[in-house]
Image (cartoon, rainbow, N blue to C red; front, side):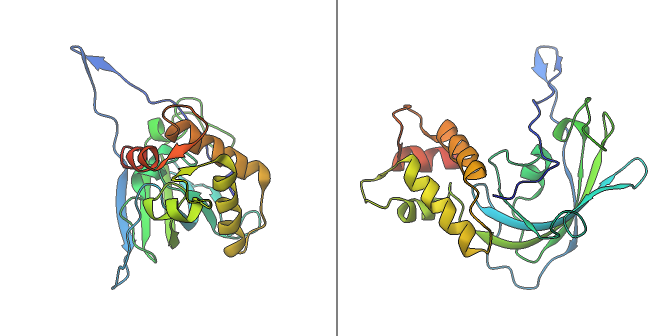
Length: 211
């Protein structure tokens, strides 16, 4: 899978006041364009194809663009699987195919106090994101039956891996065993509740709803 080079997983920043947690900073969403017809909205577990430009709020400098950098192709990721910044997982929910958003992400949901690469410490980031396509992801209920090749109502690592391979070939991307294996690891870590090496239908659907 083509993963965002700028993506990282950072721990949540919690502060305690009078024994309670302060609310986590919110992602600010501004809708730039929304199609007249919206047949499907993004949800956790969906695979999203997006083009994006990333800017520093402090001075407007662009630090990454899918349209200008690398192979200039839009990128796929699975919403809610922590493949991207936490601010993306929060800011791209309920989004229509063809919709474009300006998403402003506070440091705690981006790269925190450390920063990364071109991004200084404690930076608020602004992304201009266009959603090109929505597909059933490896964590969606509809995909379970597609993935369960032997109809035994449980998923093996090989079944999940084969599903990912077919999805990416279908959308014109070369299979990448390393990236696929990382995705499989994430899926089993979150969904194989009893750690028996398989994901049952109950585990799959229950964990999907609880992401």
